Amino acid sequence: MTDSKTSDIVTIKKYANRRLYDTSASRYVTLDHLRELVREGRDFKVIDAKSGDDLTRGVLAQIIFEEESKGETLLPVEFLRQLISFYGDSMQSMVPSYLSMSMETFARQHQAMRDKMAGAMGEAMGGNSMAMLEEQTKRNMAMFQQAMSMFTPFSTGAAMGDMPGAPSQESSGKSDDVQALRAELDAMRQKLDQLASKE
Image (cartoon, rainbow, N blue to C red; front, side, top):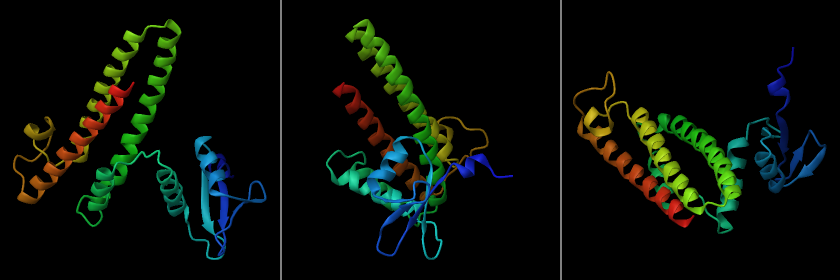
């Protein structure tokens, strides 16, 4: 029996001339089309038309790079530097799951905040709207701190909060990793503060 979830995935074939072919619509498409599929929540897979290799990751990265080049950036330069620094690092294997968990949580909270803001606008109470933004910022920071503590299982209770089974001592290398993660957390906190102040 065919898995309904698998059958819902749109297959995009990429040819040697870089053209993209949407097999579900039987037509050639552009990156803008794939961007719209993402925004609609539709899942797709890009494969090499000749070899059958999965090219989805590279195409998604290309869409991000094009969006970033338009001026409305989402990825701060410091974040990109930190991300690059993790390649080849001993913690590289942990980064994807951490980022995925963080983004999923942020997406849920973002939708909840949009719903609350819509309600607040209906009541025409600007003061309450700012209070909600401040509350949401605090929740986001708590989420990031919790994620960071899960992301650094070697950290001590004093560094990131009590964690059952955490080792009592750290090597100098692990201490450096903790410092780097603290710096990343500070950068996230500053970014959230800036977003809250703009509203």
